[in-house]
Structure formats: structure tokens, C-alpha cells
Length: 83
Image 1 (cartoon, rainbow, N blue to C red):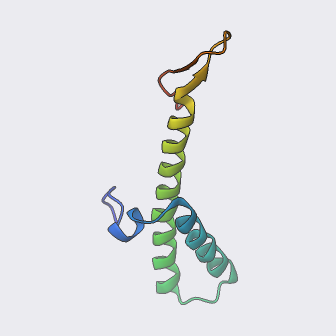
Image 2: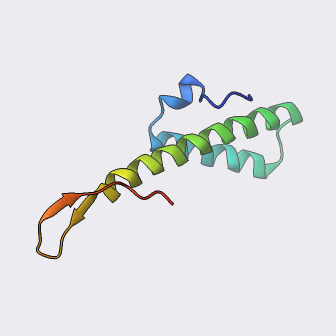
């Protein structure tokens, strides 16, 4: 898949479900028992799952970064720094 858009079934997954599937794929690939074509398909799906998990983590980081507490104890918000 050369398109940067996630497959709909992956985009619908929660972070936890996507991570669990990614871990399962990694275990299968490490065993090395799959046929080449199956291993390639699993690797490609794993790549999409990894991208999805990374995007979910960036979203969560952005939400956390926006919450700030000033020295005087007031709670505020500022733009997320995602560098």
C-alpha cells in the first residue's frame, strides 16, 4: 500500500487493540514459520498498525501537553510541542 491513508479496519481500532495485533504479528514473524507471501502481508499490516499506534500516541501527547499548571497553581493550557 503506497497510500498514506490507513485501511478502515485499522483506523477503527483502539490503541490497545492495534498494539495487541501488532505484538501478535511480531511474534508470528519472529517464529519464521509463515510462507513468504503471508509474511509479507503480515509485515505490511504491521506497518499500518505501527503507524496507527504512533498517531494515537501523538494525539494523547498533544492532549497531555496542553494542560499546564502555573507557579501560582492556576490551571491553563498551551499549544502542544510535538518535537
